[in-house]
Length: 206
Ligand code: GRF
Image (cartoon, rainbow, N blue to C red):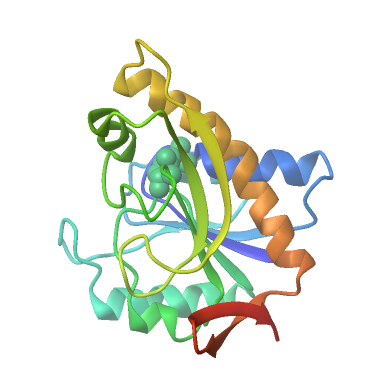
């Protein structure tokens, strides 16, 4: 499976995917890494692994993902032969210009057990809410924020004395197991496609 990665930060989840590829537990290849942040370490990681990488020009907007930039991103991913787009700490909302060319071919990892605690700093949200468990979710991306059908979740305990940092670190460790496993499942299933039924949208094989 040919992967494209979009990230805005450190890229430790991409590193986990690369490690799984290297140890033979994930049959995939990363063809392109793109970031909206020219200083993101994910670009440096890509460079160190000899993976083509580039910057997405968002025209100076801090959070908006302009339609033209999304269309350009889709074109670059398509030209690189990408089959599955993995969002790995990508901080902008993906909409139609990128979703449409990659139907059910974009996945994301989020640091909570969705639908609980969408949005930013989910580990802090979990701590503030006083839950005893949180975790991470890999899901297909739709036009919502941290919505879309769930592929896999891993639960993480919230321990007495946890700080936002210690909980975040435990979730991160879980993410590094969950993301390669979720991609493995998507690949193994030959991708999933939505099936609309009386009970809503489910996912089944094409
Ligand atoms: C992860 O916690 C992921 O769930 C969230 O952003 C973070 C990215 O971390 N979407 P990294 O850049 O992969 O280290």
